[in-house]
Length: 407
Ligand SMILES: Nc1ncnc2c1ncn2[C@@H]1O[C@H](COP(=O)(O)OP(=O)(O)OP(=O)(O)O)[C@@H](O)[C@H]1O
Ligand SMILES: [Mg+2]
Image 1 (cartoon, rainbow, N blue to C red):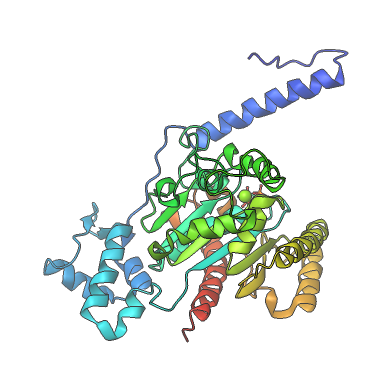
Image 2 (image 1 turned 135 degrees about the horizontal axis):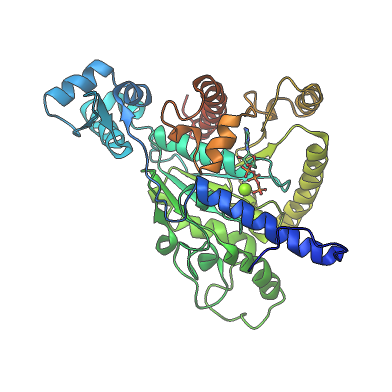
């Protein structure tokens, strides 16, 4: 389609909307192509000895000795002869040391043990742009780097989380390949294991999303009304239990499941909340966002009431608010944060995710801060943003390990 660049005099406003839509969309598409070409394949950087040591708590000297003695995974050598490990090799080192030192196994390999239940965490808020996806992606990467087995499920038809993991929703995700495939009410329903995909970020699997996810919002009311599908396979399970049951099919394979939800409170989001053992509500500290969150909480309360009336219980260990895109120098934000803390106390996470060009720029290239090589963006900007994200993610990891009853 050709887009006239020069404005047409006396153009009808309706035509103008269409023309402007096309101009803007073409421009954005061009910029996206530049930042992230469609044929780009994601791969993960290497980790240097000092990083591996920090991640695994194996001393640098031990790693070097191991490598010299030819034991354990063989790291690549960079031009400067420095050792460079893949994330898969970092995981191998964890397993090796857990075997060698059984009394300290948990320190090297913090996976959940028998009796420690799978943690399912929803990142939710129906305010668009509250950093749900950015939070989900950073958390997933952080947990995988910590040695945990993560399943990320993209419940958003916009599928931005899938895109962060290198799955372009319109190209790489086909018919019946999203979470809808396992939730649907008809015969085409698929087992969860069939729709899970490994990612380039070793230790994280994903159920990608695309627009098809929306089907669930259309099909559920039909099923509730006892429509034509009434007698078909799997249709007996009530809508809010379906996601929980789908996750239960693969429970043993993971430590943590992260659910990135859409900016709406539909059947999928409700299913996510019902399935969750923990709920993280992301909130940008601006008055409009807080007003929207208030609506979200009231509506969620109503819906939870409906679920309870149906005789189903929720089993959440925690609900926390995470302040996102936080600018501590913005006075109006300072007031909003103070208000939230005075109202909700410790339920507002102490660490906040600071607003940072490093996070935004990395996001445009579909990356988290954890993927950046030194020198990608101004070092001090990245450092400050990393410290903020690390503090947030460590706090969430602490909540998870507390749920496991660990000290
Ligand atoms: N801490 C941050 N600093 C700077 N930019 C950020 C930060 N967190 C998120 N962003 C940017 O804000 C935008 C919205 O973030 P994100 O997509 O994570 O929000 P969302 O809640 O998932 O949105 P949606 O409701 O559409 O799913 C993105 O461009 C992202 O890069
Ligand atoms: Mg999102």
